[in-house]
Length: 269
Image (cartoon, rainbow, N blue to C red; front, side):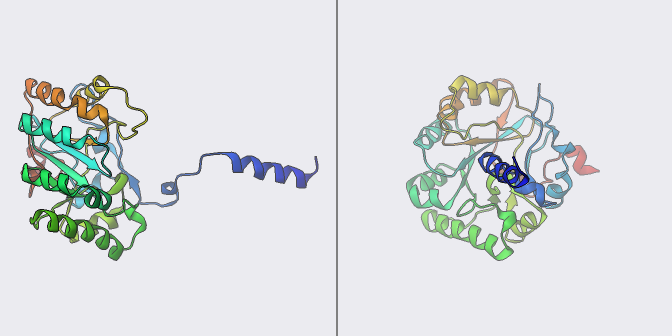
């Protein structure tokens, strides 16, 4: 085979490869929030990650006070898959507060559930209008994404406050965090999570229960996706058994004005 045919063959082969180099690898300073999970009540590896200084600088939350047995339930609501009403029923029955981070699609599609979240005392947070990679947006575009969600939620609920933001897909850079802070938001990440968003790979409530319970640690902010059938089935037991371990569930507003992702001893330094 001559050189030209080799080149053509190589191009065809590469075109069939389903993987691409991650965009983030080409963009220094852009991060995807991730860490080694908590084991046996120890803290996850967030303190060891390269983005720790940036998120701390801009007051982002990833845990509460890690010296206290407190937990914070948060749900990402990109679209409704039929399980949020059951989740809300469990939270109401257990008297456990939560935060729901909603997109523009969710706001338009599920106004009654947005209202119910608010009426039942939960926080409705901003997850952007169209769920973009906000590190690719200008400051003005970021503001538009956030303002559209807030305006629609205020119209639905009559409550003007919207203080918390979860960057879509956990992708961020320092500019995104600074802009969100400038617009009045506290960025909220997490310290407990698992792959629960794939609706075609649900493994049953016991799996969800095990994944959450084995990661629990003091001050944990728990990320769950409301599209998960497993989460809806496991939530009541998670709450009950976490309380049996001495944990108390609190709302994110309990962290307002506090140092972000550090315990009391660290704040005093």
